[in-house]
Structures are given as C-alpha cells and as structure tokens.
Length: 487
Image (cartoon, rainbow, N blue to C red; front, side):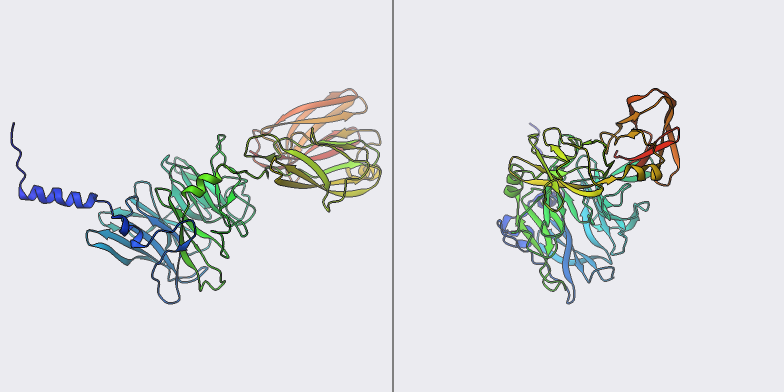
C-alpha cells in the first residue's frame, strides 16, 4: 500500500477546514444566553441610548451569524442600524455595525443574499450580496411594487412578501410573488390570512409548513398551516403567554423550529420594547390538532325585493369555511340586533335559504351564523331592502306585471353563475353587463322570448375580480341586479 504523507501546509489547511466546520458548543449557542422554555424571556441585545432592538432577527443555519436592528424611532426616521454578531474559534464577536439607515434583515435560502429595507413609507426592499466575508452596499429591488415589506424565500423557490395586491383586502396584504420574464407581481394570500387591516410583519418557514402572522391585539401573533388546496388555515392565536404586549413585530423561527424570536413591549413610547424568544416546537405541533374556528370566506350580498312578491335567496355553501374539514357547520339567522326574523321571513338552515312574501316596506339588517361542532361561530351580515313595487316601476322602469330578474347564484362566483328571470309576455329581451361606471361591457343575450321562467349560465373568465351590474331590458321594462366576480 502506498503511504500517504501530508505536508505541513496541507495539514494546516485541513485543520482550518475542521475548525470552520465545527459546530458551536451548546453553551455558546445564541450568544451563550440560557434558552427559554414555554415562557418568553428577553434576548439581550445592546443598544444605544434612545434606541431599542426590534424588527426581525436573522440567524444563519449554522447559528454562527446573528443579525438584528437597533431602531431609533417610528415612522419614518433615520438612525436605524443593522448590527451583527459572528462566532469564530475565539468565540462571539460583536455587536458590529453592518448598515446604517436600514432595518429588518433576512437571509436567502443559500445565505449569499440579505434582504432588508429602509424606514421609508411606503416600504422599500433592498438586497445585499455576500462576497467573501463582506456584504455589498444595499441596492433597491422590486421597484414596481408600491409597497414591499419583509421579503422572504423558501426551499421551494417561492417568494412571499407584504405588499399591495390587486385586488387587495387590507391596506397591504400578505402575498406570494410571481415572476414572469421581466415583470414582478404579487397575489394576495386572501382570507383568512390577510385581513381588512394593514398586514405587515410575518414569517414563513423555509419548508412552508407554517406561517406566522401579526394581527392586532387581542389576537397578536398567530399561526396558520398549509391546506391541500393551496390555501392556508384560519390563523390561531399563539395565546396570551406570548401575546402579552401592545403589538407584536418581526417574528422569526430558528431553522430547527425550536425557538421563535419577536419584538414586543407594553408601553406606547417603546421604553420597554425588547426582542423576546420562546420555545415553540411543541406549541406549533399541538395547535395543528386543535379546533379551527370557522370563518367567512365570501360576503353575502345585499338583497332587494318588493312588497307582495315572493322573496327567495340561498347563499352558497362556500360562504363559510371550516378548516377542520368536517363539513358539519350548522346555520342560523337573526336580525342584526339579535331579534328574531320578521314573521313573514323564514330561514331553512339545511338548505341555507331565506324565503317568504314581504308585507311591509322596510330595510332588514340580517345576521347569519355558522357554528361548528365545537360551538365556535362565524357570522355574516347583509341588508334586505323591501321596496314599494310602484316605486320600483319609477326607479327601474319595471312594468306592473311580474317581470322579474333574480339574484344570480352563486354570488360571489368564479368563474360561472346562473341568472334566472321571469318574462310575463312574449317579446324581445336582452341582458346586458355593465361596470359600476355604467359602461356596457357585454350583451349576454338579445332575442325573442315567450312568457315563462328562464335560466342562463354566465361565464366571467374574461372579467377581472370586482362588482358588476346586469340588466334585463324589454318592452318598456328594465330591471338591474348586482353580481360579484372573485377569481
């Protein structure tokens, strides 16, 4: 056998490689601070007077680099600084200044890129590239987005961000980014993830097995899990033990999914605002198996009918969603103030149908409840406007005969819906589609009809999401309804 002899230089090289590959001793992990249990504790980070540590932390996969921000004030302001610690054979070094006037560092999957932002409004995203031991000065990206906050990448090469989508649910939504050639766009994760508020700080795990969101109190930090249909479950609060502050910022979970870091405080002047950390692996797993509260997926549109005419409306079974997948939601309805429905109006909970013949002119404000097997409720409200048929003739040029255009079903819909109508006499009729500005977009049909009840199927593949008007027009008669397209 040939004897292998290593030169001193080769041995030195092997020694250096061995040192660089060494893991951090357990007692030196996370700056040597004692890890917390299920109760959050402050993660000690030094700051200058008048500043505080906040926003998200970024920790390398080998735990040898820790990046964080010292905040000078909110919002907007200057003086924020991204700092870092680095672990070498000699222990931890830091905190060292990395970039001034930037905040919220996040590392790419390969850790050769850092995503960060400035303190401007609307938010602007930047990136820095790692070259050797150094980082390049941040350059702005995603110029086409009106707002870009907390850009994150996953192992599946998916990118998520807080931004303004079209359409948007809140002031900004949690979104997934789309790249098409040179164009970048965002698509909202929609309800129940995004809300009507300002959906900003969040964290998505690298394997996309959970999503941490920051909702206003009392919910605070919440967790959501992926669904088979590509959506996300109704977020669950991480509980008062974690959500004890006025607001929750910058969630970050370590690569082993053991610890979550976040920022909170109990005083509005930020004088007691700190970065906290807490062990969450068992909590995240247990919450996956507890009851999911049902939620409203689509609003119930307002309804209109006339005194003396039969009213009938069925809301779709997709109006409410129960992520437990039991399909055992039960339904009930009252007036919005909790009083029973009027005596003329009945509600069949098994078919989700309202029916009856109104007897008086009035606007009814109705609340519908969906209750799961754990007795947890979600609700929706809508207005039922009962008009005078003579007034309808004046307002909508409707004849005195029972010329009728019903509310489309389902509504909202994607991509098709049914439109039913009743024609009292033979004649030529047409059904037209308009936008809310009154501009005609389409003629669904224009033909002769005999008297009778009809139904047509309308496909909205060519329309963008939004509200539209459809109008049935005949001889000296016209009546209009509203439909909602949701793609």
